[in-house]
Amino acid sequence: MAATIQIHEMSALATGVDKTSGTIRFKDADNATADLANALVIPAAGSIYSYTKKLRPYVSVAPDVVVDNFRWYTDGASGYGTGIGVTALNLGVTWGANYKTAQPAGVDIFTYVVAAPLDGDVTDTGPVTTTGYHGDLIEVQMSVASTAGAGVKTAETLTFAYDEI
Amino acid sequence: MLPSGNHEYLDKHYQEVVSRSVRGPVKDRYRWVVEYPWGSQTVGGNLEGCTGFLLIPTVGDLPKHEVRGIKMKRRFLRHAVRVINPCNKTDETYHCVVCEGFRLWFRYSDGAVVVTGEEEEINP
Image (cartoon, rainbow over all chains, first blue to last red; front, side, top):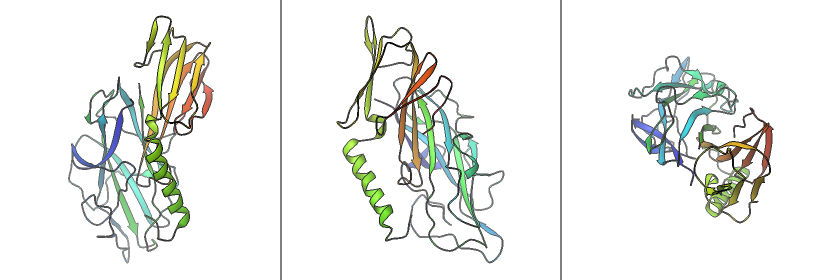
C-alpha cells in the first residue's frame, strides 16, 4: 500500500492538526479553527495581516521504500481579488511563534506553481522512510489592504506533492 | 468557504464526497506487481530485467493495465495532496513507468494513460 502523508497545521515543530483536504482559515487569532470568528477587518488605510500559519507534512503510513521530492504549489492565479495577498516562506525546521505583523521575506504564494514550486525539503531533506513529521515548515500569511472588498472569499487551493518508490 | 446557495459548488462537493466514500483514497485505487522470469515483486523502484508490469485496480470501475514487451527501467509514484479548498481540485496520484525512450504515466483517479518523453515530468 502507498504511504499516507497528511498536511498538518502546526502549533509547534512537531505538533499539529490534520488539514488534508481541509481548510486553513486566515484570521485575526492564533488557532487552527476554520470558523467565522476573529475575521480579518479591512483597514481604513494601509494593510493588516493575519496571524501566520505553519504547515508541515506528516507521514501517517510509512512508505514501502521511500518518499521524497516534497514541494508546494498553487494554480498561479489568486481569486481573492484586489487588495488581498498571501505570502509563503520555507522556515526549515526552526519553530517560532505565529505573529500578525508582515512576514519578513515572504513571497507571493501564487508565484509558486507546478513549474516553479516552493521546495519543501531544503533543510529536513529526504528520502523519508518512517512515520512522523518530515520536511520543512511552510509559513503562510494573508494580507488585507484598504482597497480589499468585503465578504467571505472564494477559497484557493494549495497543493503538496511528493514522489514515492 | 463559499456563499450559501452556490448549487454548483455543493453539487461538486457532494459528488467528490460520494466518490471518496465509494472508491476510497485515490492513491489506493491500484496495486502493482512487477514480474520477472524468476517470480514477481511488489516493492522497489528498479525495473531492470522485468518481463511485465501490472497495475491492478482495487475498485471495480477502473481499467487494468499490463505493460509487456518493452524495456522498462524504473518506476515511482507521484502524489498530490490538496489543502485549503478540497473541492476545487482533488487529490491525484500518477504511477510512472520509465521505459527506454519514453515514460508511461498511469492516472489513478480514472485509469487514463499519458505517454511523455523519457525526461518529461507530469505534476498533478
